[in-house]
Length: 231
Image (tube, rainbow, N blue to C red):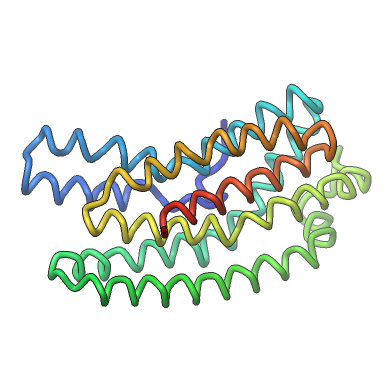
């Protein structure tokens, strides 16, 4: 697995450091260990889902098709870095301050505002890349051994994965709010619950839809994960 810090996962280090610092004050080194693993798992779900995609694409489609999964996820990194990761990282200090002061209603209000704005921006960014998928792929990749046929094959794969962009970004915000409130297990539980959904949909869709099926499976699994975080 070579990819995936930006297919949407917010960077684990920032949230993990915040949560661990909080428990360091309260529980010492044993608290640090308890905090680290659920935070890391909660923020690693996107990478785990994409790793599953790559393994199953290689096994159920072909080795060459696996390169399309990799390339599509590379292209997701720009909107995720500019919008998703930036929003989640920028919101964490405010969430932590409000939670520490016991202002939970204000925290919920800021989370709703962040979700609305992030969703709007991600839909705009994802929609633009969806429409311009073929020209973007042509400019960035179509040279050497990468031909026009590869562009035609990669375009629907990228378009399928773009459906996962909103959920990828919103998971980062929701996970930050949970962690700021001291709920370290919630993001991990949601992440674990989403993995078998992605696995099952991969097994169902890949033989029928080809590589694009992995993108749709990931989008559904991440949407489910976000809903669990916000229930």
